[in-house]
Amino acid sequence: MPHLFALFAATLVLQAGQGSETVALIGARILPVSGPPIESGILVVDRGVIARVGPLDSTPIPAGAEVRDVSGRVIVPGLVDTHSHIGDPEGGDRSDPIQPSARVLDSIDVLDPSVQRARAGGVTTVNIMPGSGHLLSGQTIYLKLRQGHSIEALAIRNPDGTVAGGIKMANGTNSRRDPPFPGTRAKSAALVRAKYVAAQEYARKLADPDPEKRPERDLGLEALVEALQGKRVVHHHTHRHDDVLTVLRLSKEFGFRVVLHHVSDAWKVADEIARAKVPVSLIVIDSPGGKLEARDMRWENAKVLVDAGVEVAFHTDDGITDSRLFLRSAALAVRAGLTSEKALEALTLAPARMIDLGNRVGSLDVGKDADFVVLDGDPFSVYTHVQETWVEGVKVFDRSDPKDRLIAVGGWGAGSPLAPRCCEGEDDEEDR
Image (tube, rainbow, N blue to C red; front, side, top):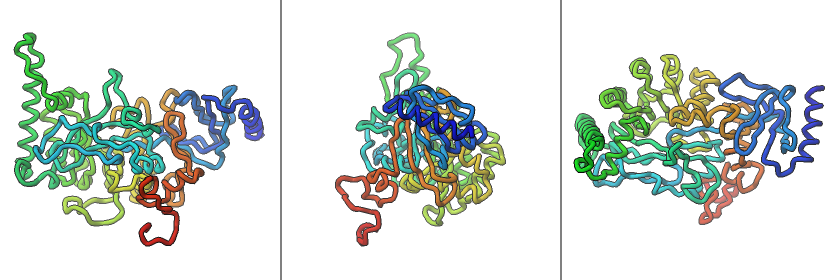
């Protein structure tokens, strides 16, 4: 009876609140991540921020709110992808293996269909990275997948107004090429050490009280100094167990904060990662192949790391994993023994913390950004689809809209005005 009364009251509020900046979604199963599930809940959004969240029968609906009945649905926080290449980003060129002055900010197409596909997969926050063919390929950028026509419209800002992002580094086979790139793992580490030593010296000279003794501005060393000072997280591509330990060694030597990415061999060195107190962002793929150094990748990686005390996130590395299938990455880890609670955290709050945004996104808590996803079933069921994606209280994907549905189910041409293929089942050889 209380539930029926709440629905009746909600209908009255809906009639009075069309166009309101306050929206109340009622009746869904809510998975806040930061707390226990709410079986029949209410999520209230006010001007882009979560205003209320709780059980429907004990959480009041604000007067004038627009009310939407989402009974039978599941609401989870917006997914946070710590490692993506949507928007066709670029970093450094072939002139040098270490190029910290390159900014992926200057190369992203926010209108690329891959950005729309990420919204269709429930991704609301993303760390866009340059590639891994360099020891250091440039600066990453953290974006909110708002609707916008410029990188500035999507960029997340630090409290001081600067664009939020990290540094992309890599080791292993990708960066071993012809000169000026290194040919061995030892030379790779030597080049990185030399560059960080140069950054330490640059920082020392910048602190000289005599302006005449300060060095000329060096954009690359500036970015590395920010990493040394902890202002930028180093996001480090690494696969083989010995390469993982090399990253931990360099991080300890120079004091930069690091997130290990991919980490195919993490299960072999889980205790060492745990002792270093370094978080891990895993990629989970469902088929063999690819590079030799990833041959020992296991679905059990996440469980082994969590059991060892390591904070774990997942990422897509889109287009290695299509962003529309991001939930499935965590589902594969659940199949290998990870709890569904930890799996959902690894898609939301854990990655948010890894990019220093845990105070804003990653869980459904009052005061946080209203980034959330409406699902039609359990997050890790193969039968579940993303129905809606909201960023800061604005719906950016709606599967019931034919254009958005095309993005969700279509091929690579879906969403591109230059590739107007239907992609929804027409018997066309080119569309498959």
